Image (cartoon, rainbow, N blue to C red):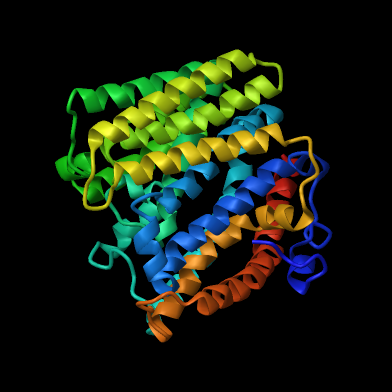
Length: 413
């Protein structure tokens, strides 16, 4: 992944061209992890089109997509609760999340729809009710509501949103510093569900009450939860926080598109990232974080092993991805005081754009030049060469202004 020291691409990705706050620059190691994870996820999807032979050999040994998203989840776990606690205000936190996540999300979805209308791509979940699918996407919980994500990567945003709701809930009841214990509980419950043979059907709640009904109920509950958690009244804040947290747990456990154990492990991984943040900032001990990591790892690996192989799941590939994600995060943590290359920080800065825009570009590529049955490294490199400058533009003209709008709204009260 090396870039020439003075290449034009490096200049595009340089933090000098992508302004950053002082607080963000201190966490360059997290940006580096985001950049690595984003490139891994891109390769996971682009390999279908340009590196089919390599993919067939690699995936049974290492589920590269899961590796990338697990690194993202660890980073989110470290960053998101810190963001809430630094502000100390649930309303400000939600404003920040809305202006951080939704504008580029909307741009990516609209771009995908334009590609579909233009005949360059096919829409995911086209057989679903359009209105229900649209409302589900507004909540960002679409993957947990029985409606397929319009873009293949959007499933992770549903788990991110569930995590936000849980973090806010814990903050309102003042249990937010119990991150290590929460990670352990989630991981143990995940392992227990596998050992007990709990195997719910995909989207079980949607099947029981109907997708449209569930989407309407969840949207209403989310609005109530967020409004109440942002209220001045302590009682309302607690009610809203608890409602949101219960909603998130119920959807992850009983209505996910992955098995219950994996959904709970994803949440455990994010809270493990939070436990590391607590230890780093003196709110907990490193021994506590290390013990939580061992328990989460043991439960996750054991759950995957007992779950066994399936048509879209190889336990060896998943376990290797999980362990490699922990190792990658650990290496980043150990090297956090070292200087991080500017180009890698730059990749991390535009990682959200990379994550959301690459499936749109890939859909257009598949619809025009098609997929190649053999390895085509030149086309793979060309895909990145188009993608990265595009993402610099979306960061500059969508992400950065929208975040500033959010900050302005917060300042105005």
